[in-house]
Image (cartoon, rainbow, N blue to C red; front, side, top):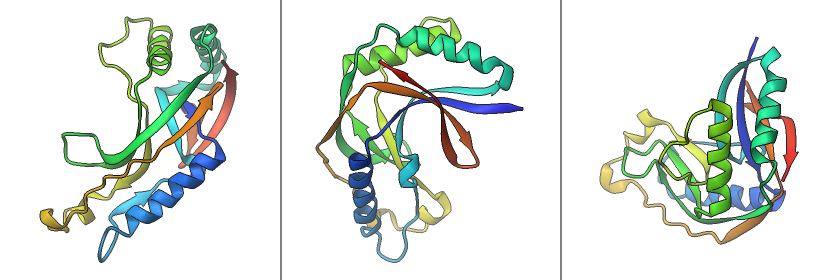
Length: 182
């Protein structure tokens, strides 16, 4: 049976609590109903890399490759600085908490991409973000364009990252399979 695997940075409880308060605040921006399916507090994280569907017997090799890719990375700090609709420049599908692009997180993403897929990393620079909620499109489209609330929140949150986690998605719940210290 295949497992849906991704690599994540889990958030400290304090940051999760602050993000839930932003969910509640933004929910109040919508007049009659909120077309947002909010991410549960326990599922708030930064996805570093989506590995995909992996056979159970391939997990040990995947774990080893991921550990090898981050073995020389040092702990780093993530700064969250804005909340916006995402992806930018397109019809919004989500509400994102955006983090600053910092060399450590960009390098970690590149190493993961290179080791897992044995290819040269893509040209894009990884931008850390957290999905606060997903927009229910048919409900969102019921709102007149000029009535769509603007989301311009600028949280000033930061936290240290001293591990990354290999996660499995099971029916909307995220389970840590392995934590790797940096």
